[in-house]
Length: 65
Image (cartoon, rainbow, N blue to C red; front, side, top):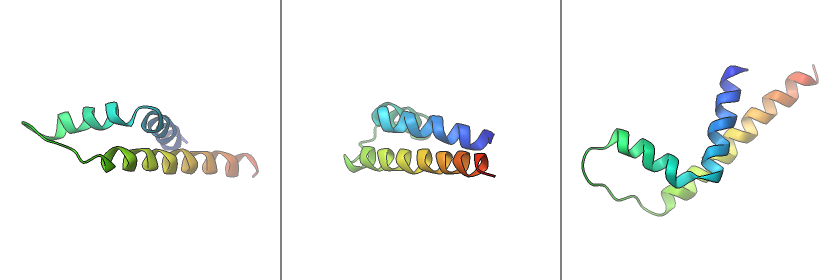
């Protein structure tokens, strides 16, 4: 349950502000200058969709049991 809640929050953030989230993590992971391709932010949004759907699927399936 806790993991799904974290996935849901992260997914919503990725959907609403992918650039901020990706830039934050890249700032931690990479030293120096880096340039990301534009598709990276689209991939982050898609990942957000997957995380939100996964979290909601688990939430809905538990409530029906």
